[in-house]
Length: 268
Length: 333
Ligand SMILES: Nc1ncnc2c1ncn2[C@@H]1O[C@H](COP(=O)(O)OP(=O)(O)O)[C@@H](O)[C@H]1O
Ligand SMILES: [Mg+2]
Image (cartoon, rainbow over all chains, first blue to last red; front, side, top):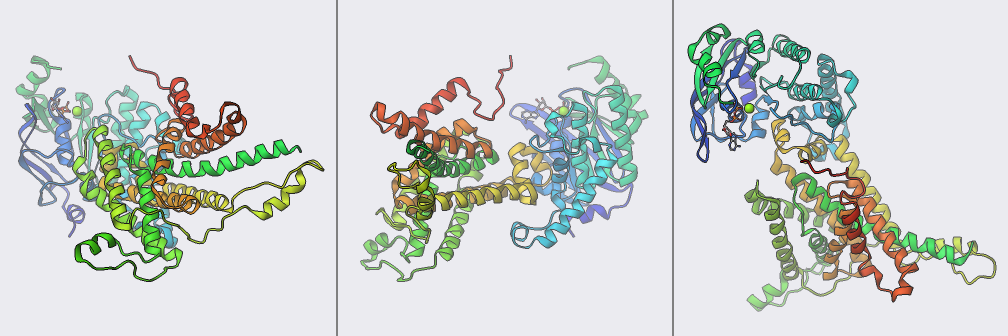
């Protein structure tokens, strides 16, 4: 059974991902130290913490961009060893980036279509010499893409080159590209950073709808505590690369160590 | 119409045809540069190597025959066959694909995330290696490439145009080499195919994705290494086409690899990342140098084709460094 199928067979509320004792450093900089937590199928799991706490690094470990010096990552019941990012996408993990990473030469439609990459099976020779199956597949993928465009309410910018879109919409297209993969686990790195209140509300609504309608498990990084408390089921708190809190939003909010990290010693 | 005017048109058309060749080579550069940020110095040598391989395969030459004979005291030269052109071209294409795989395995894979200048140096090394390897494999003599492309002036065109000049003038019709016409058509077909491929296929989209953003491409499941093999193979194919056309025109010899140098001004005009830029840049330089030679050349002693392209590129660097299609670069402060 492939990793994607294995992940798909996991029950709601059972462990989908676990990171164990992860340590990661860049030269002398310790980005993560002995961090462990789990993500359950179907939940919204937030990672919070001050700037430089190691949140993005954690996401990069999960998605295979960074390989930790120590620790294990378990996905869908098996341990991953030296995974390659493009293989991880095929296992059903999709993501967005803190600094938007869209394909700027392409339209909204093509960006989201490229997100379907893992669902495109026809190889190059087939495409060139035997259009039939390739075309059928293209049509199916197109339908899925249109569903996502409707879902995110971005019909009006379907054909617009994404480089011309305002920031908030770019973030939305990036979410669309990740959704197009029909991920089991969706990683969002600060999906609401730099947005105004209204845009944040829209994005929060989309994230909750993704969870409810598609049953997607979501791990997200967010700065805005209010938003985090509203949309997440459980929260991991990182500070200086260490985990200093883990629990429901209410538990975390009243945790002294967390309060200190946010209020006491501000090190932005 | 005056003969002078008709001559000018003829010169322009011939320039367009020459420009097609520059465009082809520049296209090979752009494909690799877009996908991997590598300026592939070996593009010209790839065209030479592809043409040599094609001739060798077609004429049944035994690869490394000199070496084998010298080491084992044998006296083998050929397999004694003569393959149909199309079959030989397909086999050569296979060799270029193998070449792409080897480049990725032996070079690119080990230089991931290196500075562009390091990668550039690697391609310089690759160019010299291939040059020597090609000679060793197929011999360094000048070869005749004949894949059955018609050549010589188009009589049909001469007949059609001979009457265009004013009555009584000494005009014999327009001279355009059939080979050039074929080259243009083939290049056109190639560009259309590449465009359709990159717009409408999974792999084409993946190529564009990688050109835009490596991290994002990885995150949707695209393997960069696989894409690099594919672009090098496609560039190898483009080099093969350029090698065939150029080789059929002037024989397969070392000078073929020097057309790559002409591609440099083309890239400065068209931009390093623009496929239309490569094509239009190539045509402008082709027409420009022929027209310049025809009009200004006689006044300043001729042989302007050797330097015209470079001077034009230099002017561009001074007055429009972003090229024809690039957006104006404004330094952030
Ligand atoms: N690729 C990298 N190279 C060097 N240092 C890095 C790299 N990625 C992250 N870091 C360092 O790791 C630490 C944590 O960064 P990051 O994970 O981006 O934090 P956060 O997302 O919580 O703001 C910082 O000190 C940062 O400079
Ligand atoms: Mg971050």
